[in-house]
Length: 173
Image (cartoon, rainbow, N blue to C red; front, side, top):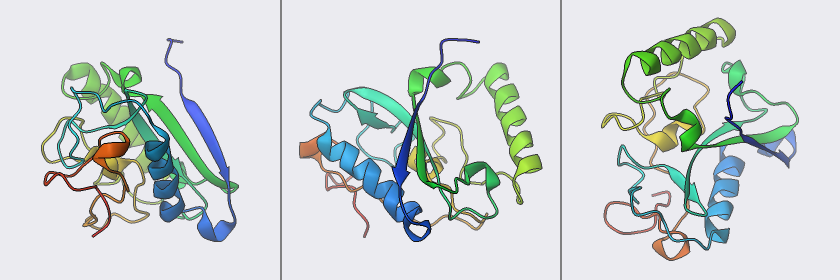
C-alpha cells in the first residue's frame, strides 16, 4: 500500500441535521479558522476548474457522507456526518487525464454503479476539466438530476482567500 492517507472527521449530529447544510457549515467553519494565505497556484473562484478547498495552504479534496443519503449508499453514514479529507497530492496520477487516471476513474465508477442504487453522479468530473466543478463533488446530491446549485461555501478573501469570480465571498445567492 502506498503512502496515501486521509483524515476522517466524525461530526455528531441528529439524523435530521447530518446532511448538506451541516457539511457546508463545517467546511465553512474550517475556512474561517484557517490563518494561512490561499495558495497562489489555486484559483479563488470555486467555479474555476483548478479550484480546490485549501486549509493551511494545502489543497484538499473533501467527501461528505451522512444519514440523508438513501440512493447513494457509497455516501451513507448512519451515525451523523463524516468528512473524508485528502490532500490533492494523494490523487496525483489518478485524477485528471491520461490512461492511468481513466482506468482508475472507470474502476471507481463501476464500483459505484454496482453499490449505489443509481448510476454514478453526473457531478463527478475530472479535476481541471472546464465542465467540472470540484466543490460539486464534495457533497453529491442523492439523485442524478442536473445540479444547479451555486457554491454553498461561506468564505471570504479575508479568511483564507476564497472568493467568487467577482471578488465577492462565495456564499449562497
